[in-house]
Length: 299
Image (tube, rainbow, N blue to C red; front, side, top):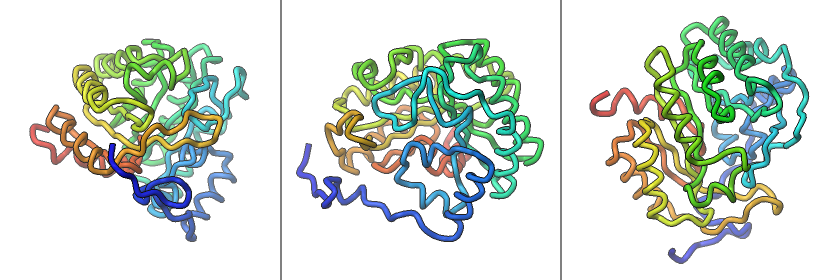
C-alpha cells in the first residue's frame, strides 16, 4: 500500500519488540512449568509476552497444548488424538490465578474434536475452580466453535463469565485457505450470535481479525459489519506474523495508520470496545479493553 521501512529481520520497525526478561517473567514461567500449564502466549509465539507477563497477565490454554485442527496460521501443535485432559488442570489454573493475584483472567483452548463435547465439561470444571479460589475474578473465555454444538455452549454458560470470545480470524473469502476445514466463517458468526441467546445472564461477545493475509480494506470493513450484525461487542485487529516457514506467508505489513482507520470504522459501527494496532492480539490487554465497556456511551 505504502513504502515500508523494514528492520534487518524483514519486519517493519513498528513491529519490533524487546526480548522478554525480568524477575516477574521468569517467576511466572517457573510457576506455569511446575503446574504443567500451557499458555497461548508461549504456544502461539505472541510478541507481547514480555510486556504482559511483566504485569502478571497471561492467557491460560486449556485442554493441553495439542490441537486436533491444523489452521495454516497457527503455531500450536496438532494431532488427531491428543492426550486426555489433565484432571489437575482446574486446580492448577485456579492456584496460578491466585499466585498472580489476578482480577481478570483470559482462558483459551485448543480444539478437541476427539472429545464428545469438545472439552466443554472440562472447561466448566476449570472455571468453577477458578471462581472458587479467586472470588470476584472476571473470566474471559476465548473458545473454539465446538463444531457448532449448541449443547456445548449451554454447558459453558453454566458458569459465570464476563466475556465470551470466538475469533473469525480472517475475512470470509480467505477463511477456507487460512483456517482448518472444520472451521468456517458463517459457523463462527453463528456461534457468536447464539452465545448471547443461550447465556442465562448478560455477557459481552468478542472476536478478532488478523490483517496481512491478502484481504482487501473493503473485505475488512465487511467483516466488521458482519460481526456487528451478529451483535458482537468487542473487536480486536492485529498484524498476522508468520510463525514458521511452514505457515502462510505474510502478504502485507499493514501500516499503523490503517489499523487506526479500521479502529474508527469499528467504533462508528457501534462496537463497544475496540483494539486495533499491529501488535494487538486476541487477548492483548484484555482487562483494559474490557474496561472500555463501562466508558462507552450507552453502556
